[in-house]
Length: 375
Image 1 (cartoon, rainbow, N blue to C red):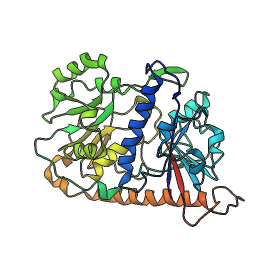
Image 2 (cartoon, helix red, strand yellow):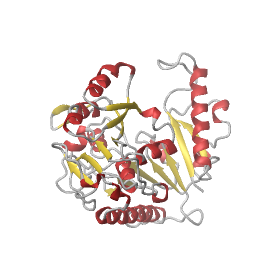
Image 3 (cartoon, rainbow, N blue to C red):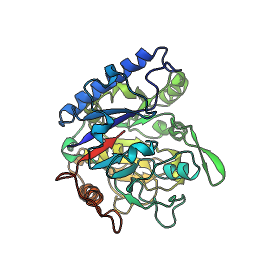
């Protein structure tokens, strides 16, 4: 049975700069856990949620009520870890562990610069195709990285034909949230999507296609939002279109043209051959995507339906209603996506069965892989 382990890094027993009273933070955690449980219920995972504090402090009983503890979570046969800073003593309590890198290139730079301390895992996955490959512009930090594309559950993302007046859209943050700059090749480089979007501020003046950005804007960003609106962009807040999974899916599938989006600048100059799971959701919904190029892919088509570039706007041919019929290129891509999901499952099975390195021998605790996923 699958377990989901949530770790909290803020102290729940003391107030801090973000909350005035410890009880306010406890209430916040309770509300978040209740929402997550509702989301997990349809998958049969609502009662498989475990809570743990990264500081090792005991969590208040009112917070952990109805949740499992770390001891219960460690009964899983495999820890699939998405939290880089999860303490090594926690990772070590699981029989096997696999790290999933969702910041390809950046994570390796952070590790090489000792900005992030990643504990030892049995297996290392990444969503960047060039990570660990010969000629890559960033170090592999001495680890063997296994590439896996972001998976999309195809039955939940069927092709949908949208209204003829619907715009090109995307859902994005505005600020990086990780410090805003990265040291690379001896210089400090800005890494905000904000700057990348502003480079295309005049784009609506050059096309008749309606363009819309759903952005996670802070209270001080009103001026830049007005600047974009004056140039023809329609601006919405992310919470109005993606407060829940169903709302997020509906917003993407109501997009007529598909997606227009920039990427973090680091994905361009690191050449990590990464594509976002959001863009994949547009493609599986039969929506073309116009996104910045992050490096050549070994399996994604750079042709009709998926146009990768860094120069001027080019409206893809896939904007017409015929895109309710997926092009042959994208159909081939979907087959690759399904194969990649099987590859990830096989890699996890190999890890579980002790084949993750030569000479390893493991006896599974029970039939079938029992993973624990962290966030």
